Image (cartoon, rainbow, N blue to C red):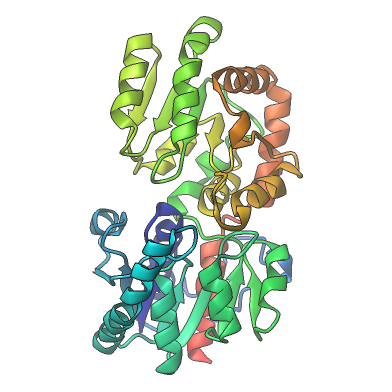
Length: 393
């Protein structure tokens, strides 16, 4: 069996694809793994349950397709998965000149996608949103190849909504129940959550609350490209953190653009921190974190909830259809997180909220319990089971 995964541009699109690719390898080749359950799952966030029974497929080959400028090349090489690029750019949130340029690239994108599909001959194509998946899913439909669309956000992106309107999917997987309304015309919609990598949901991470360690580590995430406003607010907060909570340890993913500035600020203030442009060892990072300060991208929230971590969320204000705010509010409504809108963000408010939460262990425990209740650590397994059943059927 050959599976093509169209994902890329950002870690939010890429890492769910990696989680699925690993799960395909594990389920298809694992000893008696097949569809055997590791225990009682959530099986059904939103009522969907994974199919049962041993798989007939004995081997799987994975190919990723993405953009030439994203994280794909270096991350997938590290992960050991092959990758091919298509020349494509996004339409949403761009000026007229860039939109025209993108439209002129469309025939090129379709030709790139056709060559890849012709050469690889996939049995299944999975699109994880973003503009890289559009041409691949569209052509796969024309060629009669089975297609699955993953929508990780509460408000679906333009690419996935357009593909759904064109009827270009055999299965749509969504992470939020409220997303189902956007795919009414699709015959098969499953609410299964957003896939996360298996190493992030080991018991030593997910069971760290509600017992709760002394909460001294703050994990700061801005997504794979970093978050300038969060980086600047953290720089503003360092003097107060050093004075008010000298035992605080910080792990800060800055993105490439702000890395040197942020690293120097920590050094100058003498604040204990691990500062990296990008974090690869997320299992270890979540294991250490007692509180997460983050953007509200769907993949990050899936990881936070699968690991059962309390969070302070700062939604990216320019996200398409304001989907990050909708994602964050969906989590905050359960008590798993608090939300600070980007225009209110500054150093003093970060210090205030971090100290408030870290000073109330019982509240952190409650937030962690609510966070874990919202997540589905078995989402990748559930999604792959549906995909294998789709192919076999």
